[in-house]
Image 1 (cartoon, helix red, strand yellow):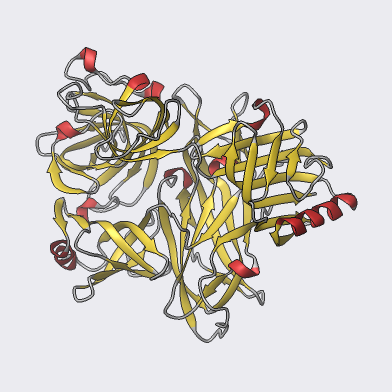
Image 2 (tube, rainbow, N blue to C red):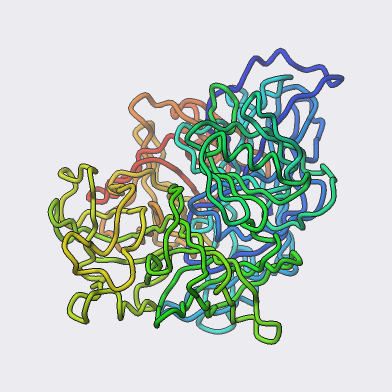
Length: 597
């Protein structure tokens, strides 16, 4: 099944470059919008770019295992490919579900593996070709010396529906969007092996090894990428923290091909990737120590229970563990993301997202001894609604790092039982952040760190210290509806003012998602409308008989819809992205995709 969508963004250069004898760089990252998946591991067997003259370039040299559930808040560099210069008008990603490991939350904190995979017609699936189609004005232009950056977003929430009533079954309707140099991208993570360090230019070169490919050998199948640094870049190398040039000096002393992870941002104007954090040596998953990444759901003494742990052995093998027991000790080193100062094990509390380095028990992989290891406290994400604002700023939590609150045991988080964290009135230390405009009942996302264990209730000690607070009321929304069987009147009577959806015959997909909060359109009590922006321009795509056609104005898009419907076409689905008004159930969308049968 092929599900084409249009590519968003700006043209990345002049379209005059077409000489296949010269090459340019294209840096491709994979990410996903959030869903209720604990793990979503599938194999990406191919990612191709197609030029305007139909020449095809493969950018993924080997089958790559990807857990899309891990990339809701970060983009992972998949490849830094050198491809022939020119204009590329489409991309296709092939997903292989043959050996998929997909597990979901059952609604009460339990984890259920999915064993059956089907398309929206109910047919079993093994592989899916997911296409992204670009209009002429938004193509990827590759030119020497000016690498193009493209992020491919496989939206789990909009693309998948799980039925647990019998045999756990996943229905897949891929929704993929690609952004060229997006204006507000997620942080990017680069994983690979150190190639070289240039102290004169404050840069270093990484041989890309995406996700958890083995960190071995000098093979450059996935390309290399230059990472810029500055005086604010933080480093943790072999368990020691550095900042600025001293960190780059320490990195230069690492052996070539040693493991390195860089987290930072892509600058669209300068085509550079600048690291805010760098981890190397034993401080990298897959290095000399075993590692586990997950969220602390319970702490008793110096023993943590970490849920949803991705285990990475020092041999390079990767497995998923529902819960992992972690032993801390006085020799455990502790660092906090974005902070060069050393912490103590007291700083690790319930709700904190962590990466733990230690030694897995040879006979029981659910036991990790970090008493002589290292814990990296990572930015933790809260989602919930505001109970009180601005002071104290309290939330009724819905999730912590996508974990339902019911799985967390907050015992011991306070100075006494009466002061243990209360998820229904979870107090946020907002620092200098301005929350005056965020009112009660507003949905919000908060990024930061949990308060130290056993200290909530002390003077000025809240449950959580915020680095960022995002009001989700007006965030970009993604609408997805399908009809099975396809129907002719799904879009009402299309007009230049919009499309009124008839949800009476809607299939499994009939919702709008905003930052992980899904709204069932059938429960709003009013008709759902998709309308164009005020300018009437955007990117509007129709697929009919497997052939996509894009339009930049809504009026021409509507003319084509009417013509196809008049010719007997029936609607299988619609996907759209924009801003959603709950009161009127109206999505104002700059991107609309309609698929006919």
